[in-house]
Amino acid sequence: MMKRKIREIGIGDEAIDITVSNMWRLINRDVTSDTVKNIAEKLKGKNDLETIKNCFNYVIKNFRYRPDPEGIEHFTAPKYLLERKFDKYLDCDDLVGILAVLLKANGIEVRLKTIAWRRYEYTHIIIEAKLNNMWIPLDPVMKK
Image (cartoon, rainbow, N blue to C red; front, side):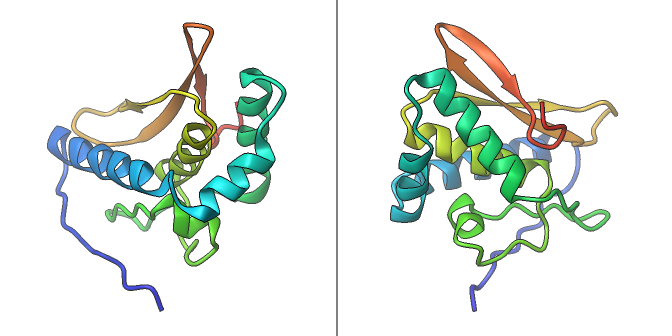
């Protein structure tokens, strides 16, 4: 059974920074895994736009949103989610992590954007993919 690392991150801007930093660390680590590379290769399209669409559709068709428990922030490494080793919680950061790692494995530049509607409260994260020098927002939770 996979041992999960638990870390208290608190609330507010610092907690958001810690979450996003950990997301990037795991995305960048997992992009070279065989699991990620194999799935990403199958999703590669004729061009970057088709690849983005294929990866996005793969995530929204294969992973169902499941919120974290109230007051607890979970983020599972994309590789483990793709291997189906753990998927009890799949909120916005998990879905964005999967999409980010698949796009990066296909050579598409991505960035993460946090959206906080309430002061000092982490509420949502989306991904943007670079296509022809433009950033395209993608939200796998909203399926848009």
